[in-house]
Every structure is written in C-alpha cells, then in structure tokens.
Length: 71
Image (spheres, rainbow, N blue to C red):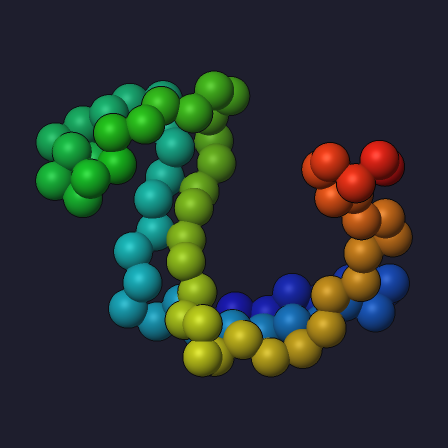
C-alpha cells in the first residue's frame, strides 16, 4: 500500500496477510470469530495493521499536539 500527497507525504507499507476489519454497523459471526466486538459510530470505516518491518517513507505533519504538554 502507498500513500502519497502533495505536501511531501510518501509512505509505503505491506498489508499482505493482515486482516482488514470493516466497521459496517453490524457485529456478525465473522466479526465475533476474529475478536472484533466493538461497534464504531459513525460506521463505514476500516481498520488494518501494517507489517511493521515493511514501512518506508515520510509523513508530513503540519501540527503535532502532545497531550499534557500545554499545547
């Protein structure tokens, strides 16, 4: 997978073999079997985890806020 933007963000990573969790507002048997028992509102989201050894690139953040640091 690759994410590229005009601001300089350009990162790639592998999701091969990783499960993709779909938040569709319904918890069905497949969700229960995979351990996904949370309901996200609003729906129409997906969650995935990349392979940590495959990430490569740069992400640009315009503003970083660290909780508890007075920002």
